Length: 271
Image (cartoon, rainbow, N blue to C red; front, side, top):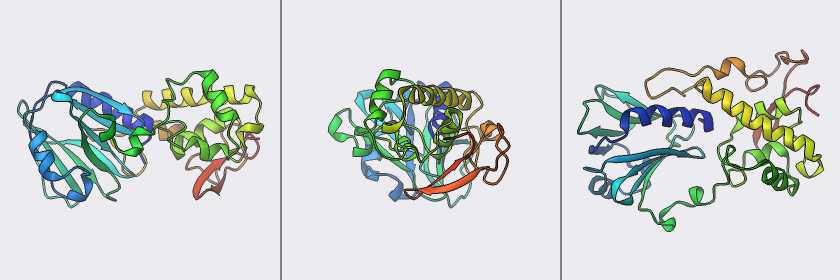
C-alpha cells in the first residue's frame, strides 16, 4: 500500500502539472470506486479549476474553486497516472480530462480498495476516516509524540499503524523506523524510556525524509504519475528482507504477526 512518502511524491509531481488546470469532464467507469454519486461528480467537477493540491495522511486532495475538494485514496494498488490515450484497461476506473492539455489523468486500481470522493468545505462532509486522522509525522512535536505514546500500552508497531494516532505510516515505514530506533515491534511504549521514544521520533522523520528524496518504495504496483519507479526499496533494512542478513549485525531478519499485520525486525538490533 502506498504510504506517506509515495503519496507525497505523487502530490509533488501532480502539483507541477495540474495547478491551474480546468476540468473538462470526469468519467467514472466503475461507480464503486466513487463514494460520491456519479451524477454529483458530473455536475460539480466540470469547469472547476485546480487551485491547490496537497496530502493529508495517505489521502490526496485537489482543492477546487467554490470550496469543493476532490479526494483520492490509493488503497493497496491505486495509481494516478497520465495517459495520452485511454486504451482498453479493465483496471481503469476514473478518467479526468482538462481544457488546457490533451493528456488525461487516470485512476487505476487492480484490487479496487482505492476510493474517490468530493467534499464541500464543511467538516461534516468529510468521511470519518479523514476527520479522525492523527497529526502528521513532520508536524507533531517531539514532546507531544513522546507524551502520546507514553500513554499507550499496545504493541508499538500496531500503534504506529493506527492512523488516528499518527497519519501516514504503514508497514514499510513503521518497520524501517523501528529498526533504526533499535526497538522491537512487540514492545509496549508505556514501558519505554523517553530517550528511546525520542530516538523513534527522530528515526521516523529521518526514514520518511530519505524515502521521499528517493521517490518512495516501488513494491508491486506503486509508480509515479509519469510511470517511473521509486528507489527506496533498494535501501530497506528489514521490510521484505525476511531470512536475509541484517545490514547492521548480520543476524537473520525475522517476520512475525502482530494484530493480523506482519512485522519484520532484527532480533539482535531491536530490543
